[in-house]
Image 1 (cartoon, rainbow, N blue to C red):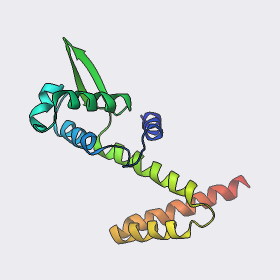
Image 2: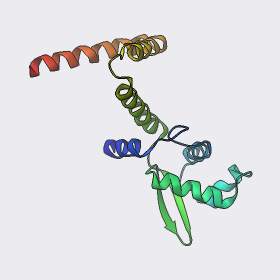
Image 3: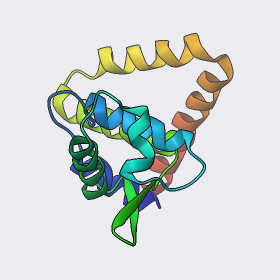
Length: 144
């Protein structure tokens, strides 16, 4: 599953983030359901959206690797490949990877922001981050 999520992160992107507004709404609607859904099943949640637009959006999400689909009769039924937390996690990791590549020589502001954000959210999480840094340093010293 982890390799699938990494592959998905590599295929996402664009001007407004990994998903457009409608794609995000469709994902939310699918996560709220307990099973697969067809375009017809989802249409009542999107009365302002044309049936064909919803169909195209589901197909795009399928092609991005975020949805699975099965054909039953003449209709496709879609379900998310990953839960909300799994997808958010890989997208956050990918955003961090991109930020580290772009930032270049001065990572201090990015790292400072990250530590502040973690610390303001959860003190225990900050302690876990500190332990991860120590473990990584120890492993690096063993390799040398």
